[in-house]
Amino acid sequence: MLLELSNITIVKGGLKLVSNLSLTVTGGSIVCIRGRNGVGKTSLLRVAGFIERPYGGTVRFMGLDVWSLDESRRSRVRLENVGYVPQFSGLIEELNGLENVELPLALLGYDGKARRTAALEALKLLGVDHVAYKRPYEMSGGERMKVAIARALAKKPKLMLLDEPTASLDPESSTKLYNVLEKLRLQGVGIVVTTTDAREPLPCTEDYTLSGSLALTIVG
Image (cartoon, rainbow, N blue to C red; front, side, top):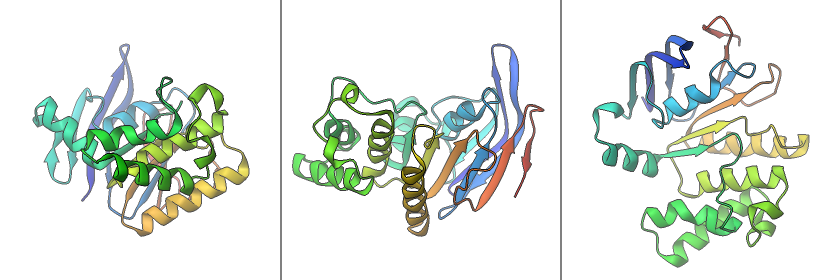
């Protein structure tokens, strides 16, 4: 099992967004979580990436109870294995596209040539190598998101977490992203992706809806 969330409860501002939720992600699966804004999709994704500690429940990654690890070890496990793409890209404005993608590779100890090669490969895969030397403010919203996805992909993670990645993409770019996700799935990567669109044709192997009733229900 790659990722196992057991009896997860998420509380924000005194409101219980998620209650006793259990979910597993295996390598080679794409788990889609749908739901309107405000039902806890982003918080759930952050819990899955052990960025945010749940109010209750356990998070296991490759058998490790991640919240039993010290902060340094937990951060290292995340850096080495998890590619997280936030809803609004999270690019560093002072860095250009290539430098943004190279950053996690530098933290992992890649030398300059290796990280540049890996970063350019990821940018080309997403079709945004033309913005390699542009700053985020010079990019469109769709380009920013693609660079953020390239940054997560470049280190070849075991788990990919994408928060509404198609929200700023046109239909053609969305279809290209679906193809990239399917390619990663076939390579054994576990993927979790969120969307507000109940009908978006994501290439899901498991499809769930997070509802306002605080229940995760299978819809397909």
